[in-house]
Amino acid sequence: MSLTPPLSGSALSGSALSGSALSGSALSGSALSGSALSRFSAVPAATGLYDPANEHDACGLAMVATLRGTAGHDIITAALTALRSLEHRGAFGSDAGSGDGAGIVTQVPDAFFRAVAPFNLPKAGTYAVGTAFLPTDADERARIKESIGSLATEEGLTVLGWRELPTDPSQIGVLAAGVMPAFEQLFLTTIPAKPVQTGLEQRLDLDRRAFRLRKRAERELTVYFPSLSCRTLV
Image 1 (cartoon, helix red, strand yellow):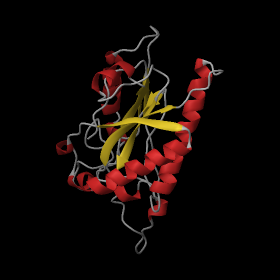
Image 2 (cartoon, helix red, strand yellow; image 1 turned 90 degrees about the vertical axis):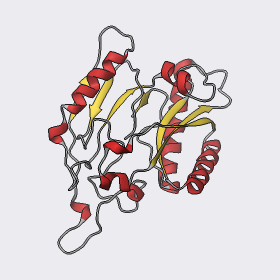
Image 3 (tube, one colour; image 1 turned 60 degrees about the vertical axis):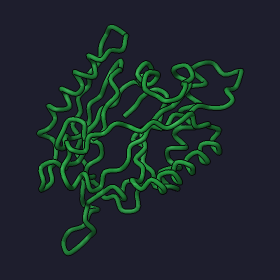
Image 4 (tube, helix red, strand yellow; image 1 turned 120 degrees about the vertical axis):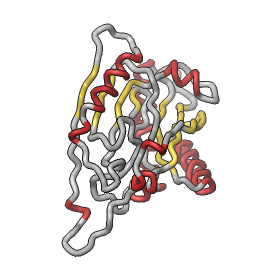
């Protein structure tokens, strides 16, 4: 179970609930053959009348926002309450603790990251962050992270560091635990920033580069990022 950062200005609770309100990556409900998520899926292969290509996702969502214009943990609390209320939309496995996953989208919690990241961060809006689903084998994970660093360099990005996420696997089912990845957050920035860029132009440039890196990591390294952005975090 992946623990959620505690700050945001708005939050979107999405997908169906599986076992707990903060399920990290239990079972996928769609056909994952050959995708970045396939290594973390317990969906069976096609056999007899069953074909995983016929599986379909069905999401429920709740939007939580405020008119006050400032971030606050109360928004996260409300979003998690909304997420738990979507439990009836979820599919459960045979062990009742595995399902099709759930999560929230928040603004990047800059103050929180400054308190917990084991490295220095540049000013808010000039770094991108996202959670990577990585191999559980330590040696393979190290190789993958090194390869992501190389791809980042090719995209004009530099890796600021990686943060291991606190998890609680005791909250998920046996099936989900069997395919659970290692969760680490990647922090990136552009180097050097173009002097002529405005703040908005710099953020747009960073997000474009981060998006390309995210998709290349998915296609070339089979590493999945739910998001990788300077604005939002899944």
